[in-house]
Amino acid sequence: MTYRLTVNGVSAEVEAPGMRRLLDVLREDLGLTGTKEGCGEGECGACSVLLNGAVVDACLVPLCQAAGADVQTVEALDREGALNPLQAAFLETGGAQCGICTPGMLMAGEAFLATGAEPTEVAIREAIAGNLCRCTGYTKIIDAIVLAAERRAAAAAPDGQA
Amino acid sequence: MPAEPPVESPTTLVDAYRLLMEPGPAWRPVAGGTDLLVQITGDLGPPPDRVLNIWGLDEMRGITLDGDELVIGALTTYTDLRASALVGELLPALVAAAATIGAAQIQNRGTVGGNLVNASPAGDTLPIWLATDTVIVLGSAAGERTVAANEFFPAYRQTARRDDELVLRVRVPLLPRRHVRFRKVGTRRAQAISKVVLALSWLTGDDGTWNDTRLALGSVAATPVRSAATEAALDGRQPIRATADAAAAALSADIQPIDDVRSTADYRRLVAGRVLRRLLRDEGGW
Image 1 (cartoon, rainbow over the protein chains, first blue to last red):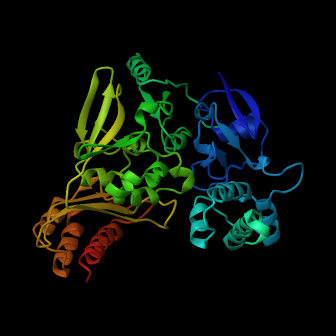
Image 2 (image 1 turned 180 degrees about the horizontal axis):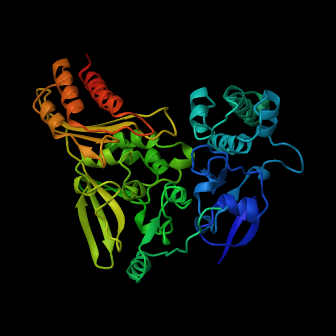
Image 3 (image 1 turned 45 degrees about the vertical axis):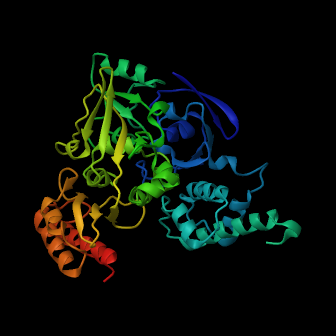
């Protein structure tokens, strides 16, 4: 069966069984290997993507439920080779160690930033509670999300005042 | 890659019911997929022969107040529950339960109906339904029928749902002066399957005594269960220390949990009593 969905702003047609995991569609059918498979059972968040703006584990979404949807993966974040603000913040704070959790952390972080919520440590810890970092580098990941949120707020404030 | 069983995606209930009547192996409905997409790996048993994707059935969405009942569609997600002003006002214990399930990724997909039909003894919303005398509404080509939550789980991982039926919604009776509380013990706050989960409801009398107490628990038996012995120790009493000690002892003696990968029977028996005792302490203010 043929399913149509929008992936990173581009319309995609996928000829595949409806119960194929979105994770496999992204990696195998569309060649978007930025989304990682960790556990394959919704525990680790390495495969986090945005589905119509909501963060989900791509290993738990069947293709038939992504039909017609807007999917954003980590490949959508940079613009013409330039890191987006959250990616830049991860780089600056040392928010990536081995890197396997980073795409999922970035997508969960993007979902948090999109809420516009106050970037408190409690709120950020809840926002990334579904993402495991086995290097245990959580502190710098949280620092990165705080930094990105503060810069976003500063940019939005009049006269550059945060 | 995991098994990819055939799937149909009806867009109306009528079409879904017609498919469910087709001869052949039983359909496995998939709502948000947070349980089924793990099960299709085949690691936990044979994958389903065929899958009915019900995610597009908008008739099964929505949260409404109908007279003195809170009606919650089966496709309501945990995120929907947390965001609902109606649920927050009328059944905040359900919001508390939803907030403990998985994390954002799971809460955005997991549903009320999925938690019921998956019928895990550790299902975190299930004690809420048992403690509030909730009624589950099932639909099929033959029409709708209702089953009390207390009778919905006849045995381990089994439900009262027939193969030709879908769980459409739940109806939660709302009673004046009723209080409902939720508590969960897991390995950590997020992403943890319960070692013990419980919901407690009661009616407060003028003199502060509790009546019509309902205590329902998960992860302490093959199905979600109520503890009649504990309810008897609470009914007609105030939430003072002596009541709490007696109720906790009654609970620990009443349940028969098992040792498994997540916890031990001894720990579950002990912690269930401790959690109940602490809940009464919070309510009694001692």
